[in-house]
Length: 410
Image 1 (spheres, rainbow, N blue to C red):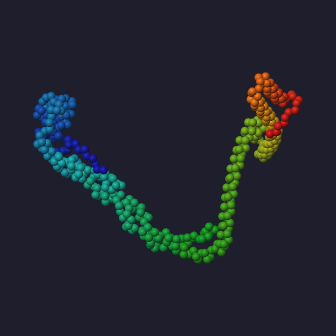
Image 2: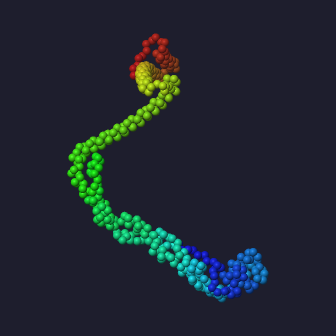
Image 3: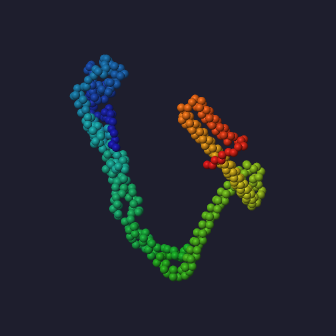
């Protein structure tokens, strides 16, 4: 971001002495946006308006004034002031520029080499004088540079670390004094004949160490080479035993955890039982652990036996209840069957009565032309038949009656 300028024209320095007629009597500086009052005096617009806020009179002749009593000064006055020669506001920093006042702000923003500006590189943005930007660009740590060996483009501050890892850099082997690119150096170390190596059987106890080219001669005389099959077999057995040992240790830890959890459960159960049966499940710390274990096991066995006895008693009681319920159910079924038979008999009796009345009504209708006396006899006979039928039904329903009852099956 470029430096933002808020140039105050009152702070700039003029090259020559300024005519008094071009100087504001309030700020004692050449006019800036001059205005003329109705009384004929010229002031800087900002200065006179600020003075009127304190006292609404002319500073020269004390005439009453307000902001409406002013108008812009003649164009020639503005031109005369603007054409005065001034130094660059950065002349104390070294800028030698001299120009008209009207152009000094443009010079400061666009041409002055002593203003501050950021580095053109996006990652840097360091603030510098414009005159130093070109020199800074040549030394900026964010400038893009090319590796002389692999031609890879990197920032300047990354290039030094890259040189220590560049795969195209020529590396000299410290053992055999041969040279090759860094990318091939590691594979060369694995084959370098003068690289110091240890015996193949170092893990079995051989302390030999010398150049790789001498390893073959050493193995021919190494006492461990003659028993290498036995050594490898023992090594394999040792690995197997170690694996089994680790497996056993894991199982042991799992069993310990299970035992700990079991003891916690036993303690919790013992505490609950002690609350239910005080004095029977208190753990005495003086009693040996084995005795306590046997006591817990025997108590557990006793509780299991009691639970089995309770389960058998509950099953027996359930069976008795089922038998009693079945017997009661059969009795109720028999009573229901008897009630159904009684209802059926009542239904048959009611049907008989209705048929009897219907027959009587039919006989009365057929004898409608007979004499009144005869008709009375027929009605009397009909009423007598109905009364006899009701008496028979009551007798049949009466449980105290000794007469025969009709048995009806569903």
